[in-house]
Image 1 (cartoon, rainbow, N blue to C red):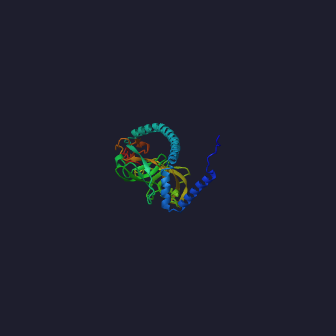
Image 2: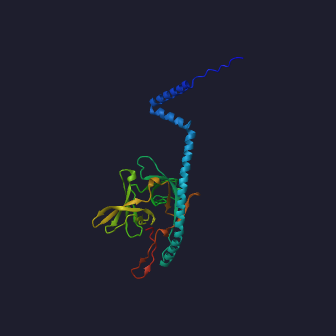
Image 3: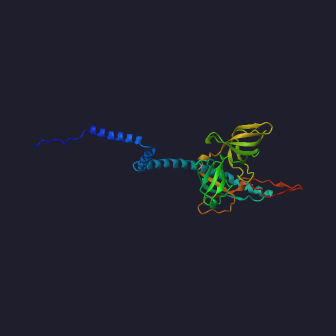
Length: 310
């Protein structure tokens, strides 16, 4: 019977050493390549070998983001439903009061939902692009709102896009008041050392005023730009005091512009009809304003026409 002899095999140690040597040579070669060559090789690896892994990671990240957004969206919907239930009776009472005072009915406001796109180019700080424009009824000067409050203003429009500025823009100004409507002033931005340090300041308050911290500051509607009652922020502390003249207060903004991705543009002409598919919500302007009758010096009360948002 012939003797069985096993086939000679290459030692595993030698094979592993050869593989290790190949990787060391590749690493040294990549290390001495110019930056352009390194970027080209890394890009080629990402779109070939690593493509399935990167796709899986992206899908997992997107699923986590969608789960978080769904939770936040549900909380906002619940809060909105509660607010609408409480505002139903307020709207009816407002209409009855206008009828008793002989005031004209408030006009209707239309709101167009849009996405805010930030540009990373130098000089574009404080501005953003909207994916809706004149075709949706948006015009320059329309206020831009978010869920939490005031964002800014439309400054330029095109057929299917628009450019808006937020409150960090040096040109931003808004007539404001305290929540109870007793103290009025102007809100303006104050740039910080870094973009994250930008703040708002409430100027023009009487020197005798004493606004407590956490007091809500809202748009007053003076000038007819921003709807009355839109939230701007809350008082943080006293900024300046001019003896016998005025005070100014630091404001904690209600909206952080860098985190805003979806906005609502308040269209001036509520009768403008956008294309099919645009989200348009009619808002009764009586929720934002309450006009009082003008007094006739000859006697009696004369009900003058509303003077717009105040």
